[in-house]
Structure formats: structure tokens, C-alpha cells
Image (cartoon, rainbow, N blue to C red):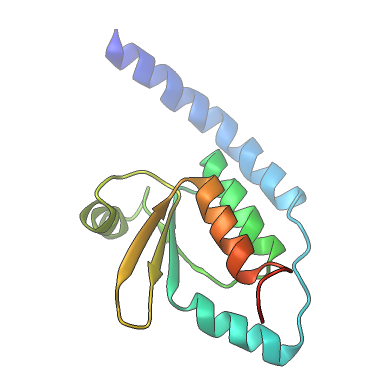
Length: 133
């Protein structure tokens, strides 16, 4: 019975994936417009971030939408199709759950932040309109 349930959900994902990606493309928000100097400062801060994601995961789409809205250039690491990224996610974060934001501080300390709501809250607090410039 378990293989049949897995087959059902795998088929469902294959059918829905193109529609989810199309919807994401059509409804992407416009990014925040910053002065070139401010955008360079934000880009420098986002170089220490990487998002492990699956391309069609609804929670990953939600996080990528926040990144688009805040005009953030965060490295995307596909943990679904790239075995090296998946292995790094499991080795560093301890579980293959996505989305997961890897935050590396100035000392090289890594923090693995799971859950789309937590990631979005972090991005909004660090780079949103109310973030300290």
C-alpha cells in the first residue's frame, strides 16, 4: 500500500509542478528599488547566505517570493536534483528538509534556519523596510 501512496503523490507532483512554476512566474512581486550603493551593501551581506530548496516546493516558492520582493541575490542550491547540495544539507543541517537558509557569519560560524515562515521573518528583519541601514 505504501508504494501505491508514494506513486500517487509523485504523480500528483509531476502534474501540478508546471502549474505551480507558471503561477510563480506570473505572480512574482516587483523588487524593492534601492540606490546603487544601498543595493551593493545588501548584495555584500547576502553573499554569506544560501537557500537550499526544491524548485516546485510551495514553501520554497514562498521564500523565493520574499527574496524577489526584497531584491535579494541569495545563492539558490537545488537539494532535489543536485546530490552534492542534498548531502551538504543533511551533513550541515541534520535533515533533508527544505527550505533551509544557510547563514554564515563573519567568523565562519554556520546557522541552518529551517521553516519558510522563520526564513521570511529573518529576511524581513535583516533586509526589509524596517531593517537598520
